Picture 1 (cartoon, helix red, strand yellow):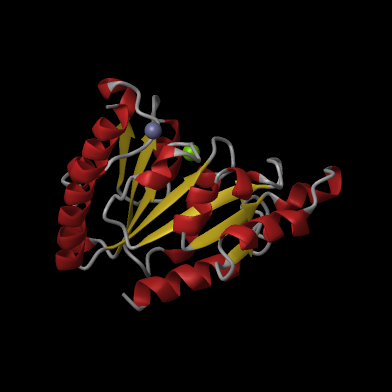
Picture 2: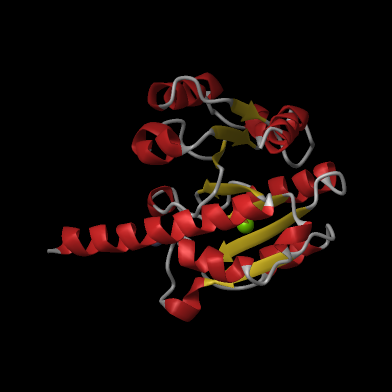
Length: 219
Ligand code: MG
Ligand code: ZN
């Protein structure tokens, strides 16, 4: 019974996602969906990404949180149009769904946007199941989390197109085995690009933005 209900929700989401995909394609907007657990540094990565790729790539952001506009306020400083979605208005969902993206995107001037970045709600479980109509999915992991996160949350690492290993500036202070984390990602998704970086210091950042720029230009 319960499985049936979940199936229905996901089927309805899939339909809406296809509709979003058609709209974004029609408008020439490339869409990426950035996911991670809370506190991995998504917003800091996006702040630096926006500063790096704009104004060359006209970028907008949809940022999801259960509550507050803190992340949107930070990202709006870049000059990019930002729409904050708070899910506490509709039950505090722990993921963004396709209809939420449709609604948020309707507040943006898609004709003037090349790249739409979705910062999903901090959660490694259900965001992996909800197609938003995006072109690429990216997962962020930080070195303050367990090296075995990828094998614990395999679906997320299976569905994503690239992974970012963030906060490498902290490695000297931690007993973190970076190679083990990368190996753990490879176990789930052998050929996925992994970008090791510090969004704080900018170390390793160019490989990520070079990849992103290439993806956007090849759209
Ligand atoms: Mg954030
Ligand atoms: Zn959820």
